[in-house]
Image (cartoon, rainbow, N blue to C red; front, side, top):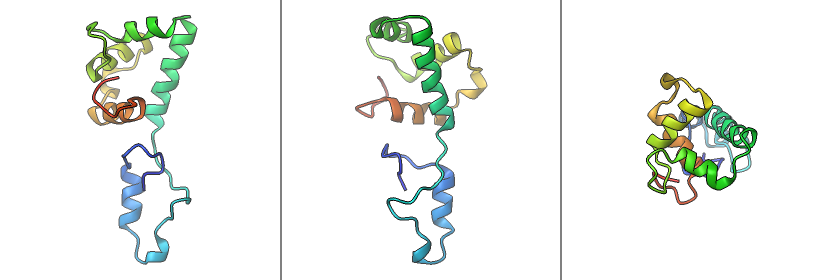
Length: 113
């Protein structure tokens, strides 16, 4: 089920597996099943565009997203930053979306980057 290899499966993929009536209907490891990470992919692209457009070095970009200057970007830092720099509306920033975003962005799969 975890086609993206990030330790997460979205509801649509999970639901599709639950509706299977015969073992032959279960998607195999190479089968493509829709998995919507569209919001997270869009945010990652917006971050990339913001950094490139602002001509920030990686260190400058990191420091601008580290809102509390503790050397780590927490979910709270990221939420503030994407509102501030990317103009994402607060009502779009759901905890579940942020959890998925961090699962994608965090190399060590922690609550911080």
